[in-house]
Amino acid sequence: MSVQQTAIRIVTFPLRAVWFLILSANFLVVSAACVLIAAFVAYALALTISYLLFPTEWTRALWEWAASLYAQSAWFKGATITFFVLLLVPILKLWPGRDLKVGTAREREAMRINDDLIAARQRAQAQAKLRG
Image (cartoon, rainbow, N blue to C red; front, side):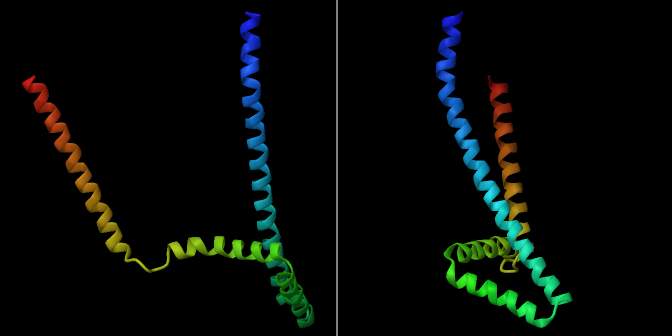
């Protein structure tokens, strides 16, 4: 039994190590995305609060800081574009470029055809059982 357990350990250890590396990489990617989202939410809150409560000069300084950071840093530029693309994708999905009634009617027609095909297949199977 110990030879079998040793063989199982030898085989499973690399798999566990690879799985741990995959989980670590996923953790880093997800945590970076969460930090990105949190940073933009914090920046949006800072702008909102500065518009509502602070003098105009402070708000202007905050905008100038962001504009200069956008001009200087490729990372900030990429993060800003990515954030706004991700923000706009759900909005564009619901954009009235398609008629929702036509899409719903098309889906209903596809479901009806699918149900008809299923019924025809079941009838053919039932007839095949009766024959024999």
